Image (cartoon, rainbow, N blue to C red; front, side, top):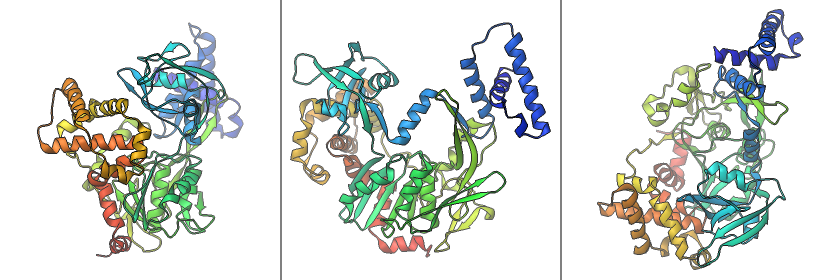
Length: 523
């Protein structure tokens, strides 16, 4: 009953002033709802505060629709705008919490923290005299972020300095790159990972590819990329398209369609391309992958993407909050619906439906969902998400129990923090100026390894039982240490030899004949 009441109240708030726009039947229903709301407002035994009630009402109303029509509170809207803009106002640090203490992993280039001289492995223990120890991640973030220009005094415990250090800074706009890695995997193969589709993604993509302009094939990693804005997806996909080629279509209520085409010849339109996807590749990422696949523009490798192909129109509600209401559906250039099936009002089942991502034989491809690519007339499949050209199943036994425990209990991560308490990152960067130099020249010292073992024994009461366990633990320590010195080192050191999807992509990137075979479906 309460859920229905909330839905009624929600409809009341949205129905004011719209009666004339509906036919008689709908008008009567809205009038009935308005009557019920007035009775609650005027005659209910208690005086009910409306703020939380209205928010709960709108949330419950939208929950009766598709899985992606949602209410966004004012605070969540602020975070959403920051994510889409690729920037926020704060101090500009990346951090982790070690034993309830905030430890700086790195400072963002050009941000307030870097300008103020904050260093890697500094422990930030207070802000404006208030302790940060023991706070949750959200509480820490809310403390560090704030209005541009607002002042903040940070208390820092620094290695080698006896007294607590106090740093005064002014919060400022901090740009966060949507490109998480951009490296050479070999002399001929480049790799770029896109973490989100924000306003600057296409621009940042071009900036990050400049050092890779000598590669013969590019791997674009969209795994874990939950999407972003449509315009960002169009801009980024256009880099690989020829003028006039369709990137995506939207289909509205009543069947009206709208095509989005590349408006210029893309700077990378002739670059051989491999795209990596998985079950967490969604929305704008699926637009990119679907266009690449339908135009036979590159090879798609990995696991079936999420299948989020509903288009939401965002409507501001006047107090900083908003609703996102589904108004159309995305279609790939060949006509495939990206959205996977769902039941109206049943979001739980929708988000629990994970088996379809993990095993190829769970995917159903009836003839009605079979399509042909636009250039080479290859068979591709609709029905929800983007099905890769090469399916790589999830390796559920990739790590031994001992190694998994070392990761889960943070023995590896905390050992890396301890390593940087004893080593200067700039000296290491000078000693190993490239990822390749670090990989070839750096080895994990026994002190760091044994420190990690002590943490593992204390937290997980386990220890390496084989030489393979020790080799893997040392490799992970090295990869994590290297990532702090050179962005992308983790991918180069660890993923190149232990990430099945990336390993297969590298093989194909070095084999022109196999790329041609896949893109022409030659048997």
